[in-house]
Image (cartoon, rainbow, N blue to C red):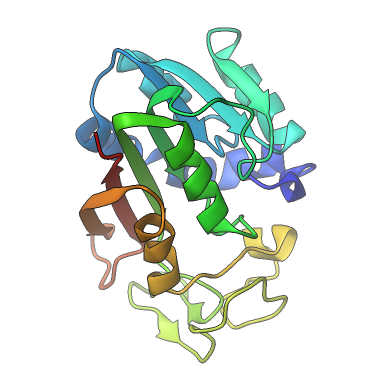
Length: 225
């Protein structure tokens, strides 16, 4: 996560953590069990660290927010290595990990392609990279969801990259109003993986029960052996 989360980590864990934790079944299904070393890239408050540990991985979590890492440490104790670092300039050698996961991080990154590229660099040959994020077509500053409204009201702005300050989909009491989230169109998000030494083998769109459109996109890529 971005250092912009410093001061908001406890709020994030309380209000957003349950939503991100719901992606745990994706990790179990698309990553699977260890053994091996797994990097949780932009681990935030660590909601997926116990899942990775339970699957038999030796886990390292990395994040640039000291406040997020504080909450993560409270969650996992000393069982998992946590490292404060810029995800676009990782302090690890090439091929050090057998797997990489990253959850809901593209909306926090000034250069998501650099983060994916670094994840690919530290991933060993034949390793797996699993990513889950909000679906950029249906969730973002251009997308307005009303109360109990399963279908978004779409507004202009989908093709605009960056950190919008005001837009129909940015609620004054929401996350993006606090941390100035980044919007990436779908093609830009996918090319972060196409342009890295990775081969996408899975693309999924996930919706919650009763919703008309997917709110999450799921990607799995492999580092060529």
